[in-house]
Length: 206
Image 1 (cartoon, rainbow, N blue to C red):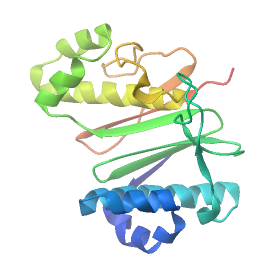
Image 2: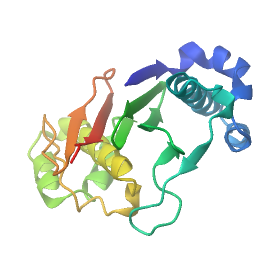
Image 3: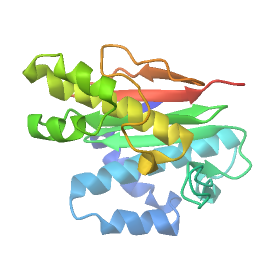
């Protein structure tokens, strides 16, 4: 697992933009705000650098694909490198980018804590047990509770490869201090700076 601050690597990533493929460069140009552009570019340059190192290949030559979605079979599932002996996941929010690599399917997510208003909207979409857990904490603590629940859910769904193609109310991951047990997966909170939450989900072998 790797954690990168976009502000620290923005200049270096800009110089290394040539490593990105045409689709990634188009995404870079599409961002209106510099900080969004820098965050995306840093995350994807670092991803390519790490993939190149793990595969002993030129980072610019690494071909990224999408695995089939387990829900519909269309090619918008987990990002992957065809034939690679490992899986990876990438997430970014604010100044942070997180990258995870594993020999089984893996998902990672990082989010800034939502506002009280956003926490109420997101909380209404959670699993019934998660909604009850959020309702049980003091009002001021609910954004953090919703934030950590949401990152656990996103990490798991990214690992599965279906993303938000699954209703957030279906799988229970927990909104309390520790993640819930999810059958077949190891779900872990990831330490990140205050004001953020992050989680990683790794499918257990077998």
